[in-house]
Structures are given as structure tokens and as C-alpha cells.
Length: 145
Image 1: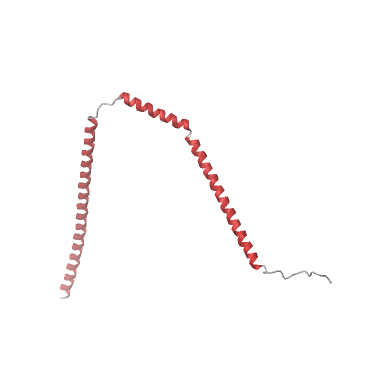
Image 2: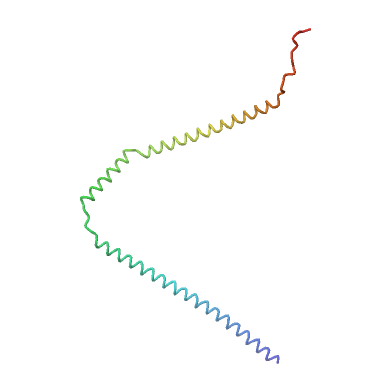
């Protein structure tokens, strides 16, 4: 009976190892299926992109001829616009505006500091006023003895 129990334990252990191997194999199969699905999706994407590229190439082959006089006119207009941009000296003007904005910001900060100082002075004066007596108790005598 002890031998049967040992044999049963050995068989159980073997079955557990087989089950673990089967689970590992199932995991590998699942990973392989996912890899196959990913490869299939990638292939479909590549085919889709290839179709789009072929369509674009076909459209490029069907382009009308370019009107060189129109192209030269556009190029001249572009060059004129570039020259006008250079002549307007926008970089200098922007720099001047940025400097003026900085100076205004500094002035505003100075005003705010002055306002804060004035408010503190007012508060101090109010505190002094509160501590002063309401009347004057040191009255000089009108007649001197």
C-alpha cells in the first residue's frame, strides 16, 4: 500500500509537470498567434500604404505642364515681398517694442512699490492717530501768578 501511495505521488508529480509544460506550450502558441496577427496587420498596413503611394505616383504622372511665365511672375512677387520685409526692418522694430514693454513693466512695478509704501505709511499714521488722546490735557494757564 505504501508503494502504491509512492507511485501515485510520482504519477501526480509527473502529471503536474506535464500540465505546467502544456501551459507553457499554450502560452507560446498564444504568443505565436499574436505575432502572426501583428505580422498580418503590418502586412495589410504596408499594402495599404503601397496602394496610396502608387495612386500618388499615378497622379504625379498625369500633372499638367507648368506655366513658366506664371511661375516666374510668382517668384518675382515673392522676391519683392522679401525685399519689402528687409526694408521694413521688422527685427529692429520688434526689438524696440520689446524694450519699451520691458520699461513699462519696470515702471508699473515701481508704481506698485510706491503704492505699497504709501499704504504702509497711511496704516502707520492711522495707528499713531489711534494712540493720540482725543483732547489736549496740557493747557497753559492764561494768567501767570
